[in-house]
Length: 131
Image (tube, rainbow, N blue to C red; front, side, top):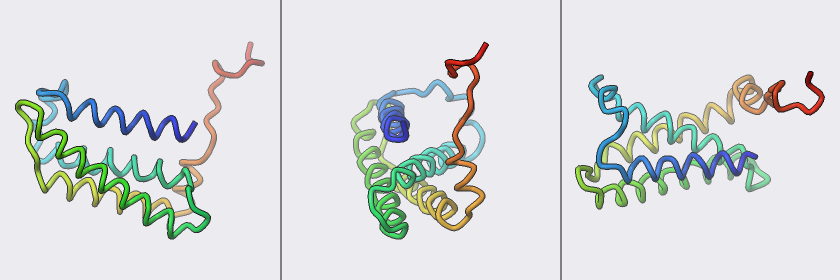
């Protein structure tokens, strides 16, 4: 399930960067909102990658999640530069990487945050025994 969520977020980011105009364009009137969105969504992506735990050691997982997310952000910016009305921005890559670094560090260092994120959701409508 975690891999699926990670892949879906990466696909959603790629689709959004392929659009000439975003559906939330009015929301972007808030100063620097696009940068904070980069920070949040790429931080979430790094957290999801980190939660997959591809390596045995937390430090390797931390490094991998940050590097992979930063590389994905860079490639996404490059891809976005081919979309009409969009362009490549170094600042976006910086916020992607900063979001990844912040979220991954919180995940590793703050145990309550990690427990909250890893706590299984109990959705009654998905349980087979619900009435």
